[in-house]
Length: 103
Image 1 (cartoon, rainbow, N blue to C red):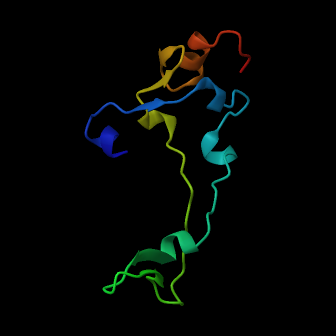
Image 2 (image 1 turned 90 degrees about the vertical axis):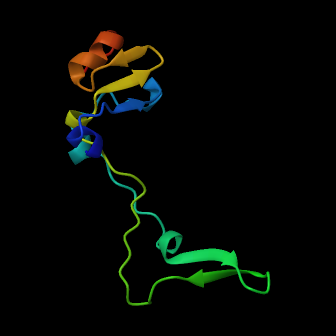
């Protein structure tokens, strides 16, 4: 969205194997992964004595959300870069590169 707001083209490079040709609305249909809360509430580092230690970096009462990824609405994506070329990030653009697919 920052690229869009600043009129900077934003391309997504992906293999066609990662395109779900049966999906109509990624925002509504893609489940967003929730990862383990420890990934963002703990940290490993070196203590002053040189020993490595794992320490908690938030209070016990702090709520944690650790999303694995999000979905960028296609209106913010200039194009998709695939092994077959570059296309617009919409159904028509994808079909130009993958005419054998039935969307």
